[in-house]
Length: 147
Length: 147
Image (cartoon, rainbow over all chains, first blue to last red; front, side, top):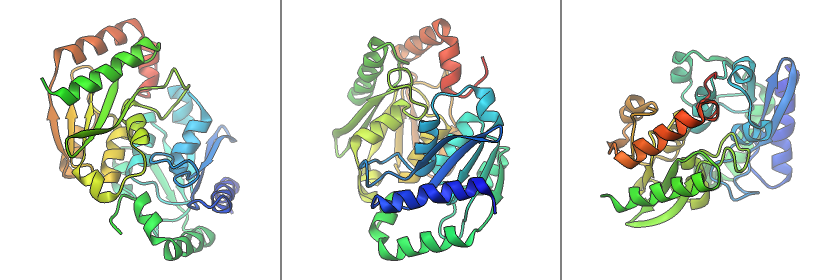
C-alpha cells in the first residue's frame, strides 16, 4: 500500500468527520509531504476548495522547479479544475486513488505530458460510493451537475 | 466598451493598488454581477487565487443551472487552472480582456463547448505588459514558469 495515498485517505476521512465531502490529497516533494488538504465545499462554503486545490494552497507558493519534481496524490480522479491546476504548475505525476466513481479529463492530462497512476484502491472506491449514495445533491453540486 | 469588462479592469486595478498582480474578474448572471475578484498571490500568499478563482469563490456556491447561464469576465486569457474551473462548472461564456501577454488553453476550452470572446482591450494589454516588464519573477511564478 502506498503510504502517501494512505495519507490522502486520512485527509478524506478528516473531511468526512467535519461533515464534508470525503476527498483528500497530499503533495509530495523529494519524498516528503509538503502540503495536505481535503474538500472544503461544505466546511468553508467554498466553490474552489476541492481536495487538490486545498492541498496546493496549503503547500504555499512553490517555485516552478519544485512543482516539476512534485507528485500530487488524490483519493479521486481530479476534475477539470484540479487537473488544470496540475497543468498550470507543471506537476509531472499524479497518483489517483480511484476513478470508478468519477473520472476527470485523464486522457487530456496525459496528452499534456502528466504521468497518471490509477490505483483503484478499495477503500477510496467504497468511501466515495457511500457518500454519493447518501448525499447525491451535494456530490452533484461539487462536480457542476444538475440534481 | 463592455461595462462588465470595465468592472473586471477595476478589480485588476484594485489588485495593483494592493501590491498584487493586476488581473481582475467578474461573474455575471442574468445581467448582474454576482461575484468579483482579483489575483491574490501576493496579498494572501496564495497559489490558487488567480482572479477568476477568487471571483468564483466570492460568488459562492451556485447551482449547475446558474453556472450554465453565467458569463465569466477576465482581464487576461484564463490559464489552465481557471479554464478548468470554467469547464468543471459548465460556464458557457467567457469574455477575455486580452490574450496578447498570455494565452491559456483557448482552443481546448472552445472544443469543450465554451464560447470565448477575445476583446484585446488596450488598457488590459498595457497594464499587464507593464507589470510583466517590471515584475517578471512574480509573473513567471504565477504561470508556473521558471525565471
